[in-house]
Image (tube, rainbow, N blue to C red; front, side, top):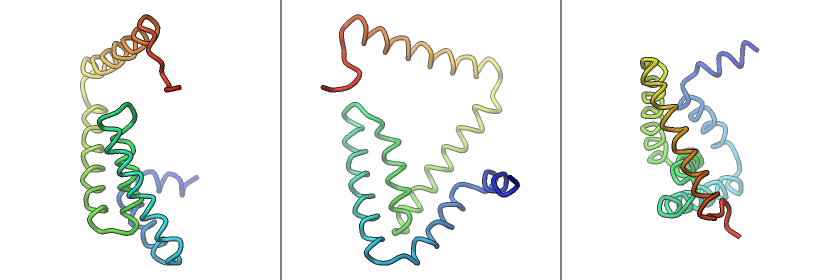
Length: 127
């Protein structure tokens, strides 16, 4: 339990760097598929920016995979994680009114999506 609490308090980029050290000890035949998969997921994420899907989430996931192999991906991932942590802290420390507005906008967006799906017969999943 104490190890879990320590891990949760450790900055996310430090956990990525620790995983990177373990990953670099693996065989070449394990590392290559990670890199290829990372590029494939990155491409899929970029495509999802222009089509329905969680594009940014896929890009962040791809950067996590690529950061195991490439320094440029680690730097980009660190920037993204810093921004996410900054925004998260702003929301957590914001006023109750600000939090209520964020929740309200999210609820309105969800209700709007539900209305589109129900009233205009837009499918949630293709097929």
